[in-house]
Picture: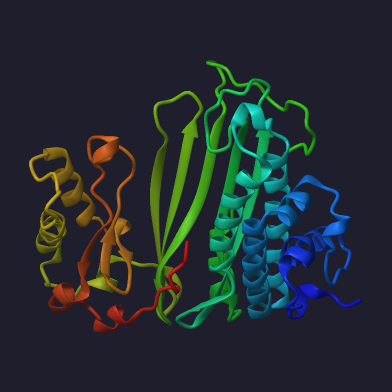
Length: 362
């Protein structure tokens, strides 16, 4: 029996084989499996996949994306991806098969379908080439059962945590190794894996859902521009929040933080011109809240701050934290000023030639 995690999958229909899910489970247990006969399904997740044509299709898509990413990565990168997959499998099984359908109004298949969709989108960002680099995506997830189900949050009955970070799988150089170290995040505290209550949630210590993710703006031989978003929701609150952090790193000459001088030429007047360009880009939107002073103030302030600039193939982009522009519902971002508009001020026209990851189908 060969290891199907590193070989093409059989074309036999997934409803008979359910290979995507069960090959991944084989990785988690160290076993090898060429297929899975649904007559042998035992766990709730196995039975849900075998019983649902929709889940079977998603399982097939997940298996294809997972196999593509594994083949595109180095052995070390593939090991990271397998660890991420094990984390997702534990999470999906825990949150989707241990809830009371009568209370939460959904069967395991109803919960698993969106979890599959999210995981497929995550896998699509692993083993992809952006400029001169092959990037991997590392995800860790956990779910803590609440003693008292408050009906709130991403998954009712649980407090959830998810962290994701980018890693350069190739080439391996001192600079890319240092960049990788700066991106890594610690996995969330593992769940207990049983069906018992793990923690309480009350007014003094409310449960929360936390999510740390990233977006690669673009990359070239000279630099990588990346944005990190941390989202959070405290159970019982009216809504959640989110924060942005942009990390622009120059690789040549010498690895360092990108500065405004790397983007704009001296004496270009960017400090006085750029904030207005961002405001104009926002104001052109017919639905823009042009009469709200807090929004204009936030745009002008962020536009003048190099730490807020995300470089993309389309241009220079700024985004905003929750409530940063005066209210949660009136966040004006993201706003992009095209490279063509910025060209007279640029220190190096090659900035506009950077590459972004392929779009993710959701």
